[in-house]
Figure 1: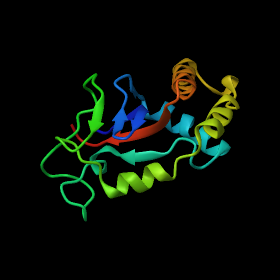
Figure 2: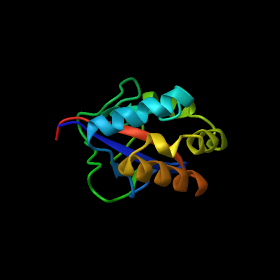
Figure 3: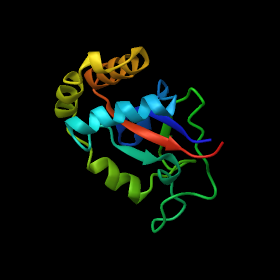
Length: 143
């Protein structure tokens, strides 16, 4: 089953994914939420496959040796043991919007177009941005 995680990036050197990520379900609500975000900017809520964050080899994105489990309430640190960040993930992270621009765009999302669950996602997204974190959407396939 595919799951989607709204995820704060708590640090970049090394990359640290925050433990307080949110499971964004049901999918229909997430799709509507992403559509609203995309209407503000196509890269506002950037999505990346969690399995491609890892690398066993400099030339390959993805790992056959290590697997992420985002359902665990732990920070995930990419410091080489056991998680080595892939070059695909590095390129993805380089294209994220600046935090200030993202915050302004998230603030501009109209609450009247959101349901209660989506407002929780929006508010947590804003909280993370204000704490100095970037925010991404991670797609975790088949558990």
